[in-house]
Length: 225
Ligand code: PGA
Image (cartoon, rainbow, N blue to C red; front, side, top):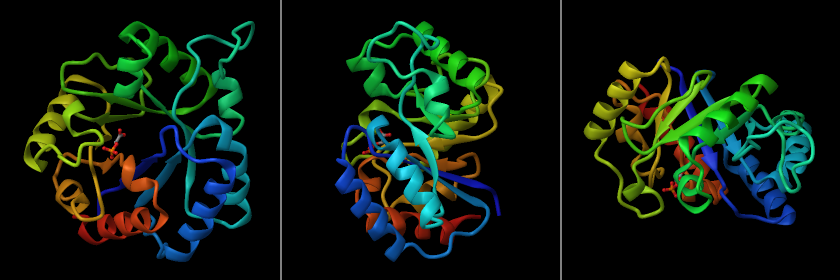
């Protein structure tokens, strides 16, 4: 069985009360997860503490991640969360999501600085790229290939094309774990994780509903080669 990483991305969704309900419901739906599958849940900063405490209290099979980090070290940067502060609560962080590249003008250079900060603080990094041409900074742990046309649209890349692009990303970067993201669901996850080069998935919409997310994890476990 190849190791699989499933990273749910809640994006800018959920109040504290909604997050607590999700966690309770997830506990009711999740089946025992095989040891070769790691499930990371990437939540907004405002939920990190609550989700962390609930995962610990209820022994949920989830590892906690954030979705962003400051490019600056701790200090006079109003409204920013430094990598050291994020590391206090989370083990993982998503950097370079296409929504941040597009809506927040995050350039390759800014993203390189974010990776540097996250790495120094000891965060594990999932670095998103839209293709196999985008630069990947040193110290990235996992890459997620997320073609823009597939994000939130219900239209995925084809598993074969995703596998080819991911093979190419592995060849030009030093990164050996590469995920596919973009409209992944419980219904289609098997098509992706059964591809040789694909090491897991990064679902957004399908992670917002606890039953759908638990089903997605079960489907991935059943289809792993
Ligand atoms: P989606 O989002 O699964 O809703 O397409 C994926 C992502 O943007 O990470």
